[in-house]
Length: 249
Length: 224
Image (cartoon, rainbow over all chains, first blue to last red; front, side, top):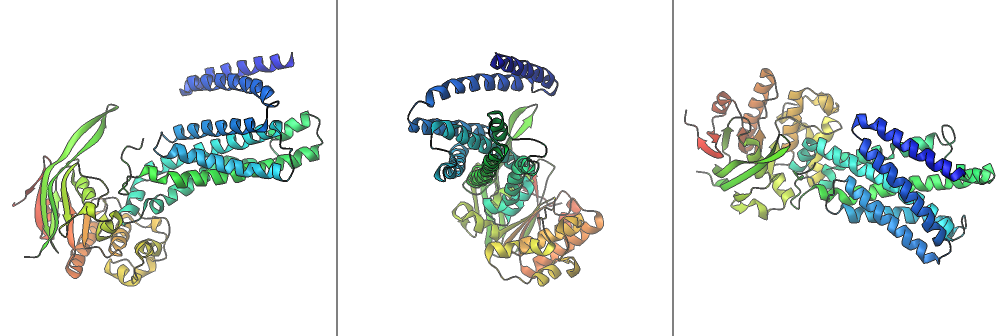
């Protein structure tokens, strides 16, 4: 009964948010995203029910599928620039999987689907968000600072040097929410994992320890993924003769 | 007569402009020819949007010509490494863009890129940058001072050719005169080949170089 009330409340909130957001011209996007998220999470719950009973490699397949979808989302955010799709998949996969390993290597969680999938998805989802923000800002910076980038190129600098200030700004802007979250952890909000564990009856100290481990891993993965992504996608903004592409939208 | 330094043959270039949310193709350079001898200064005049800046961008290879060829020292610029080409062919933009950091750091960009040993003080003196400004924040300078920094920064690369895209048009009359004198002196002292874009016919006459008018995508010599 409680589940149905929660779902009904979610639907009402999405509808209200979409109606309000219409005045900013993003009503359709909000209603679509909201509906998608409800449907997707319900499908995921059904899949997880099955997955928890399947062998471990199925969990890895699920995580890799998540990485592919996350990579595509980030790629779309880049304005579908060449090379960004493989770069996004590589950066999200390497950063989030690298940060996932210690949880199981050091026995924080048992290597079982019910731990692997949620922890992996938290890392993948967060790196996707930060990567999308980073590439979006990077593209915007390059576009807005075209004169500066071209002034560097005109001196014979390569794309990496010419776009370095834009890259720094892209990473910084993408990480601001994570940095602010870290600063205010426990002061302004109780994060998801800790909330879930507390609701499930874990001791506050255990919940806090696990949460801080996950939180720092997320931050490290965000930092790594955004760096890798912007580093490997720089050449997408330039032609083979180191000219800033004219068709950047 | 000095040897040919820079030669443009049959160069054409179209650009896309956004008009009412649609991209419209505009042919701005059309079978353009130009020959510049080593050490020569040529000025190019023309109305806004006639393609003067695009022409310089093609020579520096910040943009690509649709057809035709551009030769530097008798060699197609596409055969040069683009970075080396841009070192040899310096460019000064209409709106001076200084990089974050001090004047000193701006002037050292070329040294970092190319490993040259430049005397920053000599460079600053050549470009009439007061030495006390060397440690100043480049972004806080006046537009005229910024333009001098940009000229010095381009010269730090020890270029053979200097492309000047209306280098004085963003400046007040007094600063413009100073920059003009500076550039003419630099040309004399260093024997630089210069392609100078200007919309000011009087300025073009003062430079004493060959004058061209860019009209309908082609260059016509101005004999007036």
